[in-house]
Each structure stands twice: as structure tokens, then as C-alpha cells.
Amino acid sequence: MAKREQLARRALEGMAKLDTLTASWRKIAIRRIESGQVESWTKRLDTPVAQR
Image 1 (spheres, rainbow, N blue to C red):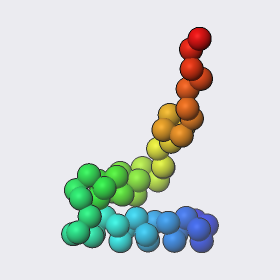
Image 2 (cartoon, one colour):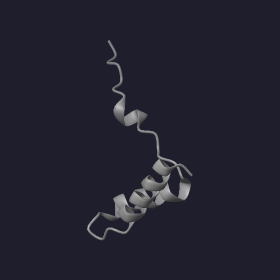
Image 3 (cartoon, helix red, strand yellow):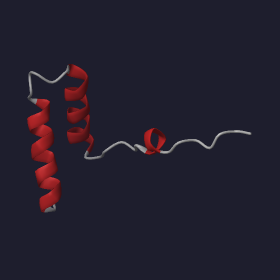
Image 4 (cartoon, one colour):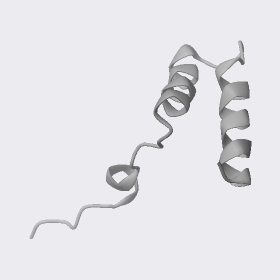
């Protein structure tokens, strides 16, 4: 595992343990730890072209 991946995993593990974080954000961290993947943000970031 690359150092960057190790650091990201540690950060996610810390995030999953934060009691002050909402349950939904903790679940996101847990899912990323379990899957080893980050979901695609393409749909959130790419603005659809307006239909004319």
C-alpha cells in the first residue's frame, strides 16, 4: 500500500470514530474503508449542458 493510501485510510478511520460527525458522514468513511474505493463524483461535479 502506498504511503498516500495509508494516510488516507488513517484519516478515514479517524473520521469514522468522530462522535461529533453526523452518522451519515461516518457511514461514508466506513464504506470507503471497507471497499477501498472512493465513489465517483462525476455526476456531482459535471454540470449538464443545457438543452436548447
